[in-house]
Length: 214
Image 1 (cartoon, helix red, strand yellow):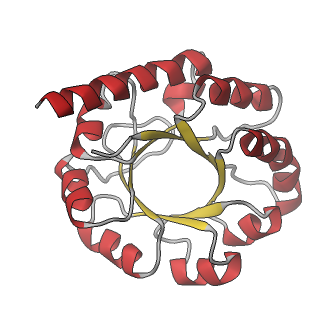
Image 2 (cartoon, rainbow, N blue to C red):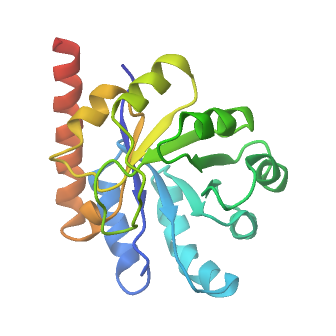
């Protein structure tokens, strides 16, 4: 069974005191939080670059991958570690050409095995399934069964990410099914981020020990 790690997704507002909140979350999750997705909407590239700069610095200091949501051009401008593509955000092959061999490219595959296999064939570094639970961060009509994680992790080497309404209380079955990463936003940023990250770390450890015991 792989180690399941945390993939933080930013709230839409990353100004103000958010850099210090990110620092707190990463301090609390040293070695457990391995990626951070920069997700802002309705700002131009220049403003996005200004917002991203302190966050990139914090991620680099904690050895956490800095991934840009939806926008390969912005990822290139920021020299980010990678990009996460929704189904309408272009082909992973084009993103690879734009960002280079080392970039981490992830693809949203909703509840579809077919989309996930296509993404893998197109060179994605990870695939994301969800939303597993109702989410206040992003509405989704897709509700995959937990078994999709089990199927994917048994058949393919490419890591899979579980996303959508995940909390410390409900993440256990996703961990046991083989999710390599839990992508979370509201469950961390809507309260005390350090306490939330610690709660996730504890929940994941408990789920792993239960899976081993089974």
